[in-house]
Image 1 (cartoon, rainbow, N blue to C red):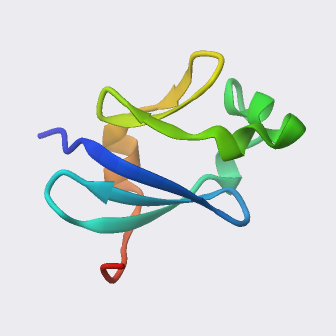
Image 2: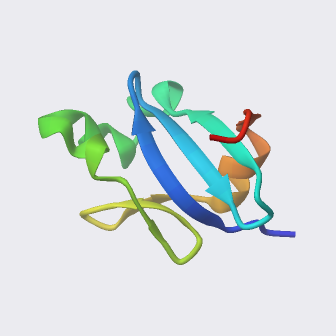
Length: 81
């Protein structure tokens, strides 16, 4: 089952604070992805800061996104904020 992202907040160190449609607040560390295509492009000019929610996942300008299943399965549950 795919759980959509409803809110994203960029955190220091290429980390994302996420809220999913099931109400869970989770943290996803993207640091290990940042040298891979297409995310390597987000390292320039603070482009990573431009993250937004689109179609239930996190996306960035330039047609860059990440699979919502990856975001959910590889993120860590955090306390509600």
